[in-house]
Length: 386
Image (cartoon, rainbow, N blue to C red):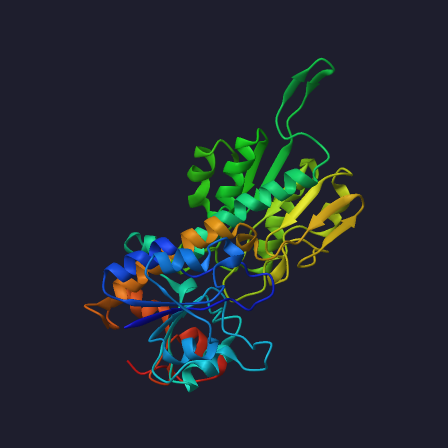
């Protein structure tokens, strides 16, 4: 069986799906691994390192895509500079494993189904202990939370830690993290390591203990409705609950030097939590890092990929933060994919047991059909056959 590793074509994407170490492990299992020439360059993994690990370097992109039995990527398939769409390069019956953005781009999923590609959306890995080692969404979110805090520290015109100097004592920075998922918890931990005083908010009361274990204060708001969706993610709440949340966090935003927002709801526009009025109340020189900027933003006025200054407050809307740390992002993502590939391939054969929650939950297309019901709903297709 041939495992192909594609070179990413998305602007700014520096990660690679497999690194030489994971290639070596697959080769030792008797699998043939083809790596597109230059696939690891942006992540500082040279073609020679892949060859030393047992991979075959392929210079012909179309040949690699056409001949691979299982194609591994980071970003969803897209149109190339030569006008060809990557999905059309796959042969019928091929398997694709990648981030696919199925709820944000259902048309791309339909295209894969029409091509009769078996596609696994890595962001759909169930959040269970059994699948934890395959959970690339979490591994990459952790990197993003770490980097967001560093960006905030670099932009803040103050120290993070408390310092006692000859010129007097300098008070520590106050950081407020909104959303205590994987990214938020890593942001909290990083801010604490840098010496800041940290508060955090999440609509899910169950994360209070995790926040406190990192040395942060948990800002609690009691909402009279369910706030947790399947898989432990935050659930989209009513307008009344959103209003109550905004009122509760307004004072904390006002008193913070840095606000880091991470709140996202899969398949939906990010909830607006920090309003323009809140920004107007913040001290000049304060910083907001909106990690949900690509999904519409948690902060009013944030723009994806831009720094915006309002009332003296810098609002940063970073995009694809894991890609800014391509070495470790690729290392972690490659380990996630390695575990999934080893789970799917038994004795050199792709084994699809759709009674298995990992396989059924992650496989979005197979045998010409869209299997994921939420994507089918977006496409207006009937309920999938069992």
